Amino acid sequence: MSTLIEKSLDNSYSYSEYRNHISSLLQNGLSTGATQSEDLTNYSSLNEVRMNRLDKTIKLTDDIKERLGKLKKEHILLVISEGWCGDAAQIVPVINKMANETDKLELEIVLRDDNDELMNEYLTNGARSIPKLVLVEKDTHIARGSWGPRPHDAAKLIRDYKEQHGVIDQVAKTELQKWYLHDKGESTMKEITLLLENAENM
Image (cartoon, rainbow, N blue to C red; front, side):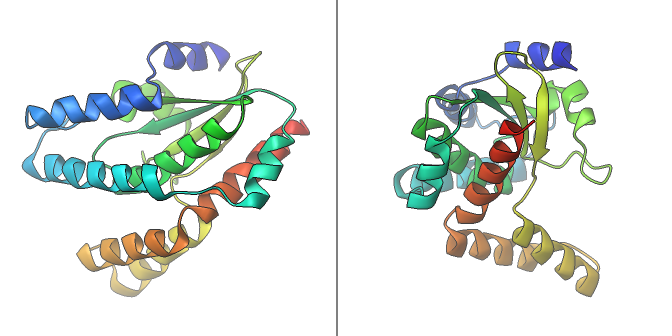
């Protein structure tokens, strides 16, 4: 597995490189990923606006800052993402804020469609759902856990909606975006911090 992690890291972007890559593709009417469509380009444009807003507004809570400050091991937060993904737009900026808070964390992002082997190791109920965070111990490149594609309560919202209506439609997607807006990234922070704390004890 560490060979796969190393291969993926060789193919990764920093947060700023990831943002610039999405922007430059959009200037040519394109999105990231193997499939191109007007819808995906529109989602990417919308997500760029969301990420710009979150970069300015997301704040780590005092509790999260304190807990991140106690980390002893160095970790790489290896995130599988795509520019058109609405969940990724809400989550990756939060992970970036966490990584910027401490020198114990480094964020690296890979594109799902360019990294099939890694994605297939981290399926969610058999699906290539993103974003997916793989927690990698920096000195050994051993994976110590994974998280995603959504915080627990957001995943429950979508699961309950699908059970009730049989589909994930635009109403469900709007409800999910409202949930993210209200949550302000706090569930993502808490769940990833807990993953980090558990990895410290391995």
